[in-house]
Image (cartoon, helix red, strand yellow):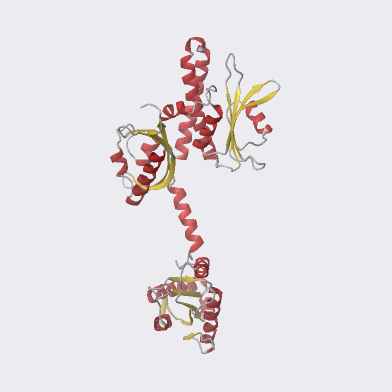
Amino acid sequence: MRSVTAAIAPSIPIADMRQGPGARLQRLCDLLGIAGARLSSIATDGLFVTAAAGAQTPMAALEASAVAAAQPLVIADTAQGPVRFYVGIVLPGEADHPKQLLSLFDPRPRSAMMATTIAALAGEVLAQAAIERQRRQLEAQVRIINDYAALEVQRRTLFDRASATARIGIWQCNLSDNSLIWTNGVYDLFEIPRDTAVTRELTLACYTDESRRQMEAARAEAIARCSDFSLDCEIVTTSGKRRWMRLTGAVESRDGVAHRIFGMKQDITEEKLMADRTRYLAEFDVMTGLANRTQFQARLAQRDSGDREVGALLLMDLDGFKQVNDTYGHAIGDVCLKEAARRLVDGCGSADLVARIGGDEFAVLLGPGATLADMEASAAGIVGSMRGPVFVTGQTLRLSASVGMAPYRGGSSEDLFRQADIALYAAKAAGRNTSSTFKPA
């Protein structure tokens, strides 16, 4: 199987400076997702910029380090200055051309893994372009070809290791017949034996329905516009594993007509799970599984912005919960909280939101269609369900709850919360184990 990048390189031959070097540098920036690139001639008295793309910024110290390095310089995060991510690659000189330094940079830092991957991809494009140029000058440049052959081996090793570490593979689809070319990373992602003859039909069957729909729409638009696309897709591998991958593609055109698509596929399952976990922790109470105070306040804020209507707010406190904690310990108190949350959800299944907003404080938001009778029925159900005994490690505990109700009659969410809170304190003052409705009078 031939290298996919070998097909990519001729479309952006950075090493061939006779045809629009600035445009090719910009294409390289777009492909690698970086802010800028600079190509400089290396002379005894310093560096002289011959081509540039993107936002330029002083970085003499970084370029000097790259020139002095024995191999490509890759800095994932400089930790200071306007340039946070930097890659410097020294391009060997020729008889009539001095050595050149290719600098890739961005104001945003990268992870070490991503920095190595970007450097490898850049090296892939540069090496392939250089090898093509050497082929045309074979008789006069035998020694240089041997040097680049060694560089190619190093580059291939670096790229393969980086791809395996980052779980990245490169793919290509020829639009004339929809034939596919994959690197090993893509085969491994789908868990398809390497060197298997793959088809679009085989690939599409691995996508979930929603991801397939989104991918096909993005692909069709990119082909129509001869542009790029990127999205996250969920797939099911041939062994039945569910994975998330980041799919990027770029359309190559000839005379304005899309000819082929190429890009990368990266396994981001762990990143996706971590993001989902982080989002869950930000919005939900870990102990009870209910929405937390942050999500509750965000829902009320939607009421103020006009994005969501609210019918009523119920606030509930467990009566005597502190005594349970003091007498039996927090472990048993946690069991009581979980049981209270379960009963609250069971009794308010039609509510818009059930949240834990404090230690033993809970909130229930009813939708705009809720009537006063619905509100009172919900409150009565909550009070009644909380009276049931809780059995914990051979002990029978009894709880009760006080509920404050406030139907939405206009005003801000802060007004609504204050009204429900007043009603809650009224229920407590009435002896607890009951509910009370806020009355404007």
